Image (cartoon, rainbow, N blue to C red; front, side):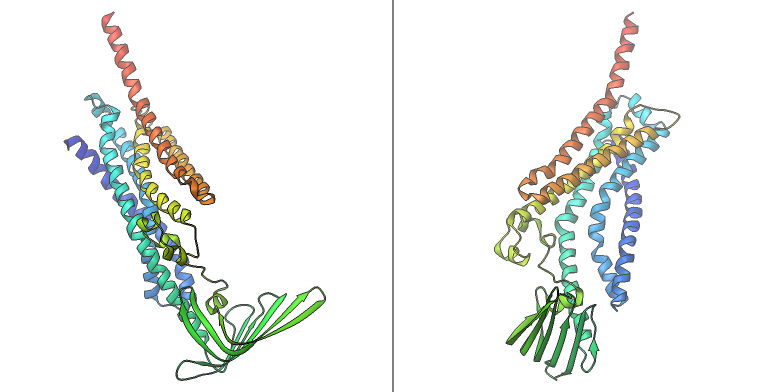
Length: 380
């Protein structure tokens, strides 16, 4: 690699490290504070809070890296322009296309980092986080299973257990579910067992009865059902909603491209088209990193040197990045509504690439015009 390329690349990498550290810290701390409050309010320890915040870090980094690449190239180009380095390079015969080569290498490097994150580390971290959340749900459930006292896990729920046998059986269980005033249910059973399922903890009620009181205006009806065995989603009772299955984002990209029946069953019967759409969204995400870097650099090459700085070009660069991000969100929403339209996920990358080419062409065009005018005066 030529020395000028190494110089520009070293400047961009240094700035990229600074901006990435700052942005990741701000973004991560913002998310960690809300997570800290939620976990501590549930009685979790500081080690659990630290583990959960660490598992969210790969996702935060994958989101922040393209923005950090844009900030590094824009700031680096602004500084080199202010110190007349870009003017000297262009005066030495380096065209904007030539100057953009190390920037493109830098953008591809950032894109590879994002690819490693979105295809490897982020799914692994999300899968581990889902497992830990299920374990904590089990722990939260068990802390309410105390004999001899009425428990109120959430609004509208009353729980009473007479005793707990040495083998873990719950004796003489009473549950009142009054969350829906128009449909109140009371469950009683002689025995109950707590088992872990893929969707969370489940109560198996043995030899019991359910009483359902329905209200429709002034009319009321009572339905009584006796059962020998009945399963009750105790995790949903404590949290206010049950987990319908694993998230598609917990699985690797190759498995999403060719989803098997086990994956579809684990995700709640999600269509195969949704899995492929998620995979293509991951493939398209790293493509935005070199585009963000090129937009930040190419826009600042337009207009040449000015003692008043390049603040106008900076504003145009930010606007270009906003346009690409807007297209990315619109494409994701469109593909989310109709997974068969997954090719639209690559449209923002194509539009961004066209913007970069147009910006570099505009940056090189004034030099050609001035060069042609100088030849005309020399001939005269």
